[in-house]
Picture 1: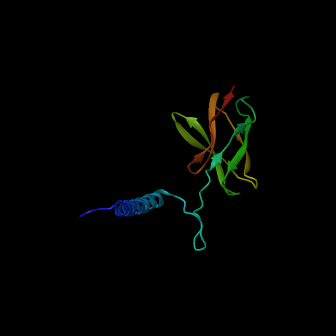
Picture 2: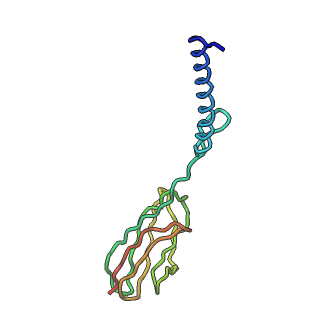
Length: 141
């Protein structure tokens, strides 16, 4: 069989086009499988992402006398207004919940006061479910 230059070019172009088509179909499937948020269309919208919940905290005093109160303030970002917040302190290697509670106000702010009677450094945090603030230390004298 005698091949001319033109038939070799046509065969090469056809093989190249077929290869490109097969590679693009395979890679499109791989991209579609790894894309977590599909593009919005008329029939379905992009999946909403849940905002990370966070609680900030600030103590009114870094040092108080035993039996006096300390006021904790902060923000409860991405929590619904009215969400119950509790105060915890670190005792004997674990977090213990105090009776002091409050709710997140409109605008996601909160204010709560608690009396501290035990002398020494007291580590406190504010909690809602699995979400908690960083720790603040109040020295009780």
